[in-house]
Image (cartoon, rainbow, N blue to C red; front, side, top):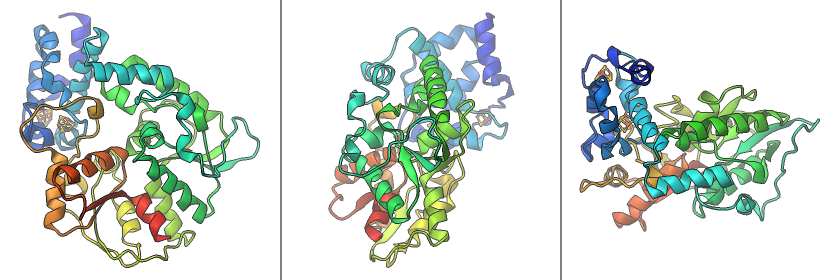
Length: 378
Ligand code: SF4
Ligand code: SF4
């Protein structure tokens, strides 16, 4: 066995797997694609098969939702084996054009959406927001980390605009990085581009550490997870916006005065809930909206269904005749009579909103980020 293959087995502790199958049993995409992650834990032990395994199209079906890892009794992270196999393909340049273009766009312009850096702040053109200066002697309480999708996507940028409105209403001292903000690399790592992720890590940490701020607040749970758990040497504490906003409400610094007589449910994003145990803050916020009624999905919190937006899936299409998980989610919401599905993640917003259109219920059911609801309830 060559050193690289032995490294693969040791890196993912494949010998620790007892083949119980709880990973595959919990995998949400196993219901609609051929992905059976337990099989990869077993087949990965055979050094002859790594290349063959990496060419199985289902390695791209994984959304990196983390359910398999959360359920593994041996503390293994089966999804990492799939990411490792993706890396083998990336090294050989064998990737779909959409993935290649997204990665090249991040390398060149700091975002995966093929947009120039000069347009990164267009979403805030009409807003009076402070752009932070590196090495500023005066400390700013909060640095907002906006996220590429919130900055460039015309639908999602409304969420970033709502955050500005909410923080101004609460008199929070905050600022933005501006055009120099770059992709956090969360999807880069999950698509298997380890070298580019290391670059994102090093360059962003150096840049963020040059600012005199009290904390970094991320809008996207994907950015939050990466800044908080995957970066090396970041000196500022990292929060998700739901943590900051829940605290503002609890401290009486943010008050909601406008009624919203709707039945609201909340879709837990995998990267906020399962991967970071943030379940209570979003619910605390939603239950404080005047006039609103709140009801959980049956499958919520740790058992929440993945929307299939993560793990680089915005750039990889899954071939399947089965219903998308986001469509199942919309059916569940309709069954409980929900009028609003609240989300706290840009990918959940896009996948679920699209699913309401596919299901033909977009007139009667709204998908909105918690921040958009808050901005309306001020
Ligand atoms: S849940 Fe863990 S131990 Fe069980 S088959 Fe999957 S990886 Fe192996
Ligand atoms: S991370 Fe989620 S989608 Fe990927 S293999 Fe694990 S359970 Fe399945």
